[in-house]
Length: 34
Image (tube, rainbow, N blue to C red; front, top):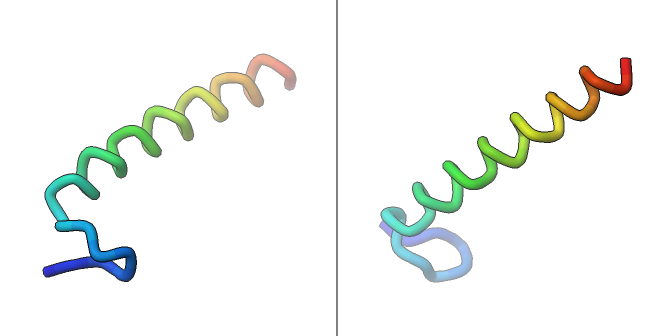
């Protein structure tokens, strides 16, 4: 399957992992702010 941008799903999974890391970092920062 291919996403809307035309990239295969396998590279997208890697991007999703990066997004999860970004979210965890953001959550960590927000927790520190609180």
